Amino acid sequence: MNSFNFEDKIKFTKAVFYNFRKIPLPKPFQDGTGGFGQFIPEQGYLELSDDTGMTAHYTVTRAFIKDMLPQILNGETKSYNEWRETLYWKSRNAGFQSAAAVNVGTVDLLMLDILAQRAGKPIHRFLGAEKDWAAAYKGGGSLLLSDEELVEDMCRYVSEGFTTVKFKIGSDKGQNMERDLRRIEKVRAAVGDQIDVAVD
Image (cartoon, rainbow, N blue to C red; front, side):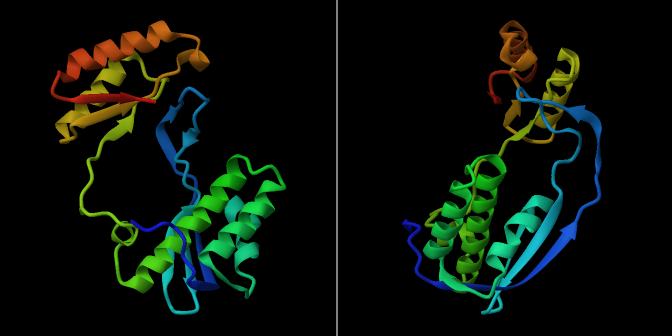
């Protein structure tokens, strides 16, 4: 397993940002913290290239383009560790919370994508994975759905072939555990004991 201690030098040379138009959801979505409202949350897609011709790909926010891109597309050459350290301390001094922390993590993933490409490996193998598959689940289950709509969604996920389904809890900002427990019981009864049920 790699220790995430990469000394390879990286110089970012080009960025292409694809700005997504707002895509409305068929129905507003909400989780226990307030959710993301009426639109799909992805704002855009970034292709970030280095001086060896490798190009990393990831979804990013417009705030990333405004705040983080100028810090890395600056002509400097640094190792993976140096980039992480520099960006961490710049963000830490501004609070290193929410969006800033996500932005640093995004650069981390972009760098790992580039380093994996240089090594000629898929990123999971580059990071030490020994298998080429992972168990998958389908999640959704907005708190705005009625119990019946939630059960219908979870049953649809099972009919699509998923053996684990996940939905949101935290009704009324975590103050209505009775509703959450009722919904868990209804989903469990509907999908049966052979299906794993997860919540967050």
